[in-house]
Image 1: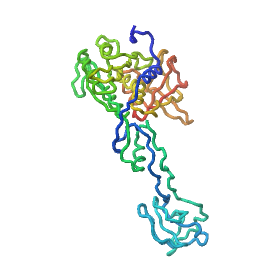
Image 2: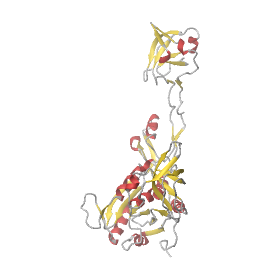
Image 3: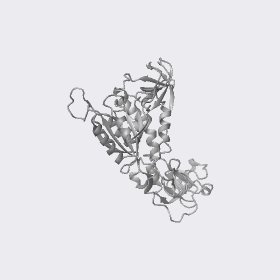
Length: 419
């Protein structure tokens, strides 16, 4: 008896664990320029080659003084200026001050910076009486205050974000070591699917899944290879699988994984690879398939994920099931699924026991500071409008039934990659 004929549905956590157990992360590395590194996963730790800041500098626009001089007089003449990139390097007589700007290097001997708002210009003198008493190192950012030389800045396995790029630039590092991005080939299946802009005939619809899959792959840091729409023809589908395997680490299809007469995916996988599992205890998205396209002399082994054809089901199964797979494959050791948090239901949620249900919801915070959630309405797996207006999933447990107003449910906020 094959996995597709086994009665019962596999729990989501079991399915994810089975996938992760079968994945070996990509080990090939490369070095990329910093301005091309966004979205890559680090293949080695990044440690700081320098102190940041590299010198004591001023946290304020104001005046550099010696605390001992203030003990003698609260009024001093200005003998020079220290600007960012133009430090003061002249003689600094006792009983005088130096005009200094934010970020400028602290002159030797200075142990206090008085902000300009606390200083009064009185003829040729600066009066600091309003600033007294002062504290040692006041308004001075010491060398290495942010990062010390040799400190671990970003660990191996970290996926580089927008915030990381200027951080690395601060260290003067122009090139970074990264893993190769996973290559993912994907295509849609079905005679009914037509390209955007085409005139639809009876029974035809536009192919939308590829557009969502491509965006999610790219936002997740993968190299996306779009193979288009493949009609329900076994020979053409087999050619598409072989072409995908030649180019990619992962092959993703949408459609063709249910039990219809024209669904050839199982037959092709039996010929080219092996099926790990087929049916998941989730709604929408039960007909999700996972397996391997086995290596031959000409082709590398590739992972296979078969997404359902309905648009909401395809996006949901990618979000819940494919993302952790891609994270491990990419070497992203820090990736975690969004946590489930409690919320109060503002509307009923229709639910039957048997599958974990990911309904589309809209959460808000009420006047008491409590998180509330309401349904987006139509929860059909083909109703993508309700996905578009949602800002969270309402995660209803496998054995849970109908939810009434006022009950506590769990919600999962969308991750940044989903916006």
